Amino acid sequence: MAETPTEAILALLAARGDGKTICPSEAARKLAGPQGNWRAEMDTVHAAVDALTAQGAIALSWQGRPKSERRGPYRITRRTV
Image 1 (tube, rainbow, N blue to C red):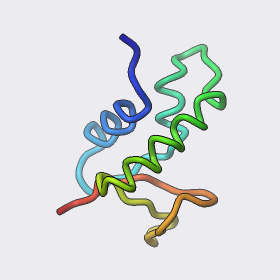
Image 2 (tube, rainbow, N blue to C red; image 1 turned 30 degrees about the horizontal axis):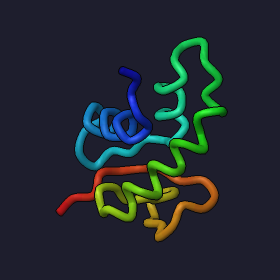
Image 3 (cartoon, rainbow, N blue to C red; image 1 turned 135 degrees about the vertical axis):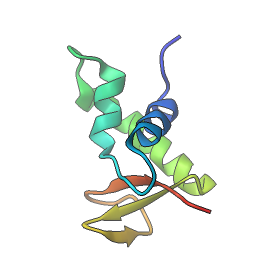
Image 4 (cartoon, helix red, strand yellow; image 1 turned 120 degrees about the vertical axis):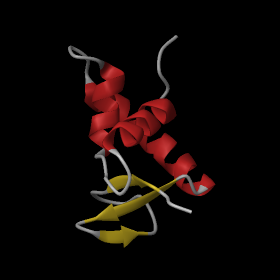
C-alpha cells in the first residue's frame, strides 16, 4: 500500500525529532520516490498540511516565526501539547 501525504509528513517529522521542522517538498519527494515528479505531489501535500493544521497536529512557521495559515513559503513542525 502506498504511503499517504499525511503519513509521509508525520513519518518525516518523527524521524527529524522534537522541535525540528521539515519542508513540504520533503514530503512530496518521499511520495514521488527517487525518480518521481515530486512537484506533482505538492497539491496533495498542501491538502494534508491544511488538514493536519486544522486538527492541531502540526504547526507552521517561516524563518522561525509562527504562521497562522499555509501561504507562501513555510516549514512544518509537530505541535507540542
